[in-house]
Length: 205
Image (cartoon, rainbow, N blue to C red; front, side, top):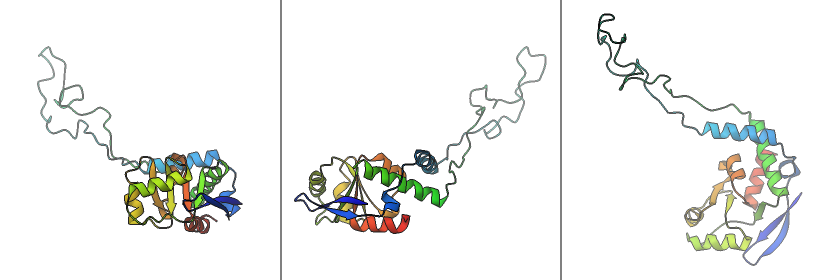
């Protein structure tokens, strides 16, 4: 399979041959959905906590006797019905993560990359190496590709690349180790360097 390769700011383009096993697979919507749900669930902190009637301080003594007062019977002032009482169904810290096999995760990435290539949303460049940490440099790079926003994947994120793109809305720069299904799906365009494509092919083939 071949993809268009953009070379420099002059608008020159060429062709690059990529592995069909990574960029030429059928789109498996069910697998991609399952992996995305598991990935997003794994990012949840799950640290929400509330106090039930046994956790709230106080309430050990019965406020008044059971009978003869004319009031409703009550055993503790920390009842969920009382102000300052516990929560009826108190939230507890929990783990939202779901188990996904490595082959399923890699299969979902292959499916997403293949669909991006079919929709012409995947762009290949020689390299993304800025000579200065200037936002204008990154903006000129994207303008040459015709993109307003994009996910840029390199083999290594340089300090200049990080500083030049952090103020651009909708633009993210990551390395191949940080590539995840949510980032791939959440950006309109994905830009990959030649070196990054080589690493991705070695990982997913």
